[in-house]
Image (cartoon, rainbow, N blue to C red):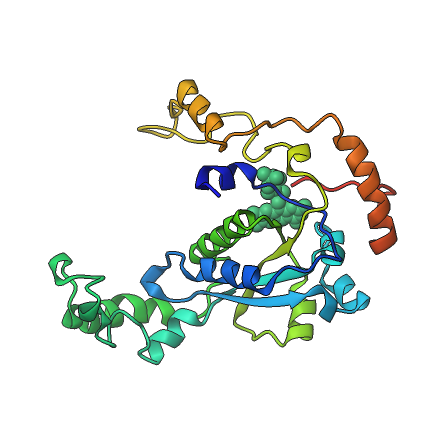
Length: 278
Ligand SMILES: Cc1cc2nc3c(=O)[nH]c(=O)nc-3n(C[C@H](O)[C@H](O)[C@H](O)COP(=O)(O)O)c2cc1C
């Protein structure tokens, strides 16, 4: 799919066909997309656990739910639990596995070329002992990590590119720890649901970032960036900007989907099968 169309088609999908498995190649491609993401120092900060719905009992699925995400765990055939490995940097540092440097890859690959001031000596005498070592010796630093976010972003877009529905939501860190033997140093970031969508992406409309008020500025923190409406037309033509209104039949679609959820997960708290907004 054209990249602009992938961006234009992505929505938070809440309803999945539980009966239609996701091909293992598609899951692998999503994981490879995450692996290829940019990351500081080439350290793999993310860890991921791929969980198949069929491996979980009803009680397991219930345990993973949070107030923000319930039926996704019942419907999605695949859930990827994304973690930030708070020990990844220090471990690579301690093991001298930091790829671009002690291994000599810095010269072999010329990824960090001497032209830019990189050398074995600079790394072993300055970067490692004076910058990274002290930072990592202060212990684990929870609170998410940009590298993991970038990796998940690529995983989400890769799923859409393959015709899958996908969405992110929190999961019960405690339950996952018990069910899957998660190490202490892994901080839960998000569950990514994967599956063939049961709802039509055109029914939902493009909602992301719709809140009023400028969010991007130019030159200072007060002057709104001048987004050009003519250029927006081009993005519309390319499929990146799509209709933001829900389709007229969306309510009816939700009514049908609600019945399915009642059967699969039981009624939503509050009586309806409606989805929370975040
Ligand atoms: C880190 C993260 C956590 C999210 N958590 C939830 C959630 O708990 N439940 C949910 O329904 N949606 C969740 N979302 C999805 C957002 O609500 C959704 O992306 C946003 O409303 C924009 O809609 P769109 O994705 O359809 O464009 C989450 C998204 C992100 C990136």
